[in-house]
Image (cartoon, rainbow, N blue to C red; front, side):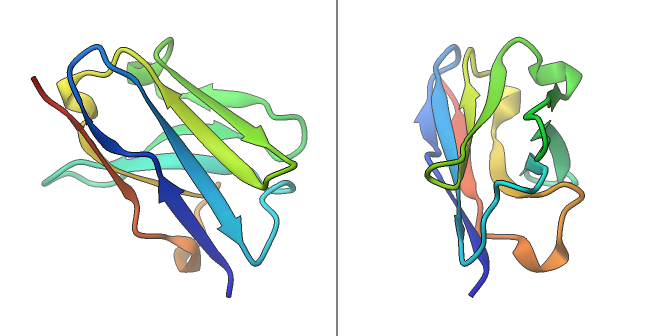
Amino acid sequence: QLSLVESGGGTVQPGGSLRLSCQASGFTLNMYAVAWFRQAPGKEREGVSCITGTDDTTTYQDIVKGRFSISRDRATNTVYLQMNNLKPEDTAVYYCNEDPPSPNRWGQGTQVTVSS
């Protein structure tokens, strides 16, 4: 079964940090562009960051630039999202998927809550 599993979410105070993991099962992520997406309550899902499959070039949405960092570990078939200086507006369910996203690869996501 081909799947993506997100983990690493939690509840942190403003200014805190979390590292999210995206683990692939049944296939290798290494050749794919992978993106992190998020969906806040009452809002549409939006792209946050992407890493290419060829040379690991990274891109970020403006509101997370300088705070989030995407990376991949090809040995473990995992893509990470390091999130620093978290803000309440970062509260959302975070998902990973190919970029552009594959409709069949959406996982359960991992909840990130930033609250004092």
